Length: 584
Image (cartoon, rainbow, N blue to C red):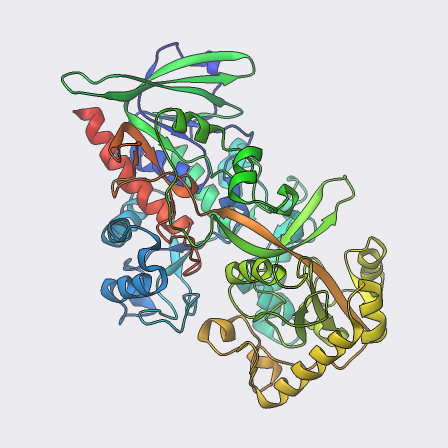
């Protein structure tokens, strides 16, 4: 294993690379790895001190229809059905040619990276597309999950992996995926679950003797670690951390009209280097979301402290690309992808922003209300539509924050936000004392403490209790699709896995806000991921992947992993085109 990370002092001025990648998140690391697999000399530039970006904090799910894994769980699926689903869900909100390129190259992208690196995927037996009532959708096969990884294999590189959000870990830094969670919740009821739980807990306790956190990595941390471990095996890859790209230079193309990207200037701790680029520069900096000016323009009214994404995507690289004529794509449903989030101040003064993906809001015994105490959306819809629904409802009646309400039975069984299932009275007190969690012995008391309409809340609870008896939500259709039912709880024994009564006081609530989890609007590209200039012609030598590329989903959250999957595939596409330029 080589030492990837380099100080700029070790890089000669005007050193030459086949490919320069800006951003070491999932898409950027994939682009660098594809190039390294092809024998190219690569410089991977990351402005923070760790790799992984928001990918490291995510579930790591990678949505790629038609891979060789799909037949293991869904042999009937095919690319024509995937195209039909995307066409139905997205329509003209994105360029169909780019969606087709994604479908055409997905299988090869997955096969090549698995065959020539340590990246390994598995299909989950049931992982539905999010708009599961649309034609062409499937229940499984398109969403791939990275296999767990032993972080000890990274040696001295292990600290370079961005740790998971602390609130997503247990026992002081032990990562758990949904398989682990299910076993931990059932460890007193099943011998198999007890053995699984004991194995991972003992492993974690051993890890803590020599590491600051667990080394059994799952989900996005496993994906990031597998990419970094694979890159470390290639001598021709250089990783420059804590490094900013100050300028992307162009020069006249020999024998052609126009200019091409041929150099970049880097800054690290006061040291500057300008290096040459033969094939191209790949933008993979994570999107615009933490750039104050771009945020004010594209996400008006959404404070930055509602954003749960990683800190690196400042949009600085976007400013450089815009100076070369790059422009954003148009027509997306939304400029960002969304999730409802709750917020809590940590002991160190930082703020935890917790996305409510699947563990609470769609479960029996929960409902979400606005300030009038009224339900205003389907709690079991996708997190993206939930976030959009909050913003739309707020235009009519105050719905930000919204209030996720449950009874004590639901709290104990499922937890709520940062409060884990089975929380003790002492632990609940800490959440109550700092205001993250609000408690009321009755619904009237809860409403008064929240400052919302008590009669509205009681009426909403009465309705949801009645709907739990029939299994039908006539107001918003909660639990009416395969996706919704998959994130409910069939084991609760109700007629609808997403519906259950709120009967057992005390009652609890947390405040929800719409949090932007990633950019949907990015630079317009062609089907080769080449960034388009003002004349709609490619800016020679400039590519965009991941959240820097305008989403092929057009701001529609079609399925799990629809940022990481296209990020992987277009990294493959962009790298092939760039290395062809380098060789030419």
